[in-house]
Length: 270
Length: 270
DNA sequence: CGGATTCTTGAAGTCGCTCAACGAACGTGG
DNA sequence: CCACGTTCGTTGAGCGACTTCAAGAATCCG
Image 1 (cartoon, each protein chain N blue to C red):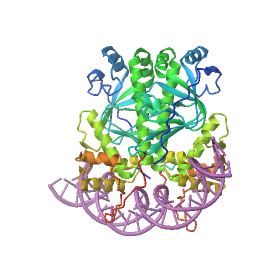
Image 2: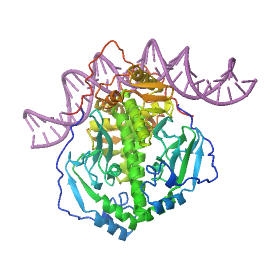
Image 3: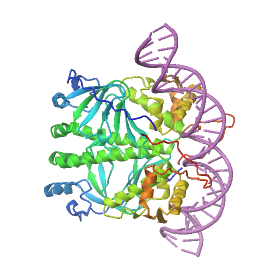
Image 4: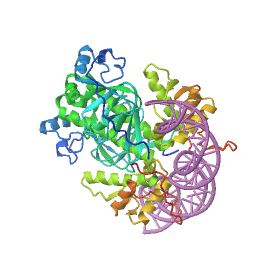
């Protein structure tokens, strides 16, 4: 039994569209990417409102009717599903400029729950209206397809590390990917704050919170990173990358430091 | 080191468009789903050719330029990625009526490799043309969005079992899902042939081939299914479903039959 | 029929989990 | 500001679920 599902009413602020997409710092990675001025105007008109979420508040829940897509304006969210045993499985973290809800288009209802990891603000995009807009703005449509496609790729990558990588590799990859995402947003790729709990990280990576803790400790002891609570600094990216790519033989979590086994069991393909 | 990547030139038959989508048995689950006659005609014109693949032949490979989507006409394919260590990770199996290549739209190049599990035939759909068609056929566009969305859901489900389910549950779920897919195509949900090797199953499910073998043996011993090579019959679906949903406490693979532990560690959420 | 691949079965080993206890950070209110 | 409970994170010991390693048995296929 992991976290109980946090159910909270959504705080809806007055529809203060005080900022337009055209002037949003994220417009080059968000949905209206690549639109001309007229297009951006059309798009602005359908984004009816921006919503503020408190930490722990749900943006949407499993079973909700699908009406909107949501773009993160600031803050961080996670999406999770409940597996048949009732356990939670985190299926993704979302940061500013990213779009949530794409998985609900297929069935007109949400199959995952999205919750704010910190106080956040999101832009609500009525999908029916967006759909109409595609006819007018083929470039936006194309971008939308790319967006969905990338979401598929992202999930495939997750399958990859869940299915065929050691815990150490998974964590290394996770940290590097986080860094890349921040870099793409103009922040440091090596120094950032984890917005999610160890529990969420572990859940996402298919391991326990204890394993996360121990792995972080080991990375720290090796001098690869510095950590203070949720503040992380990747000091030795090369080594972390080596582990992530399996170049360095990954070590198990409960390493008995005395005997250095020559591990060869997951041989590298030709 | 898993399977080496099978590189083979693609056998291109003369463009015999001997069958139109309108008369295809799969048209209600494939891309042109829900099109009227005129729409189906337009669509038919852009599906330039049908291609035959021999077992083991690649439809596309990692790194290939993205030009087409592919719909399975008959046969079965698998898609896999190579993880940073060089190992293969199967990210999906595809049966008639399903569409491959959606993950390549985002970057204009394929990040996975698709290979035929048996002699198969696929319909090649030039994406640029399809894109143009969306303007004319908004219903098709909508269906396409649903298709991509479902692919995201499918991957999320995979993450779920890879990340938070026991081996026994994963296999049970896999078999049930296969059955459902066949049922949706008018075949038996309980009696079918596995088109993929144990190795592929294990890889997809994040376990070894030996574990797959042992689990199948156990299901057989419990009388839940009958197996002869790749021929499977789900005899006791209720029990398999109970295991898949975690209702029955899943048993470990190397079960010591003498001591029946009362497992309570993965408690069911409220 | 051979030879190669695929699958099964057994025994031993290990990666990461469970269980448990402690410590640190964070709010909240006094 | 400091007690206070609560959530979150760390650390240790033991063990369990699955893997690895190693043969052997079927099955496929030319």
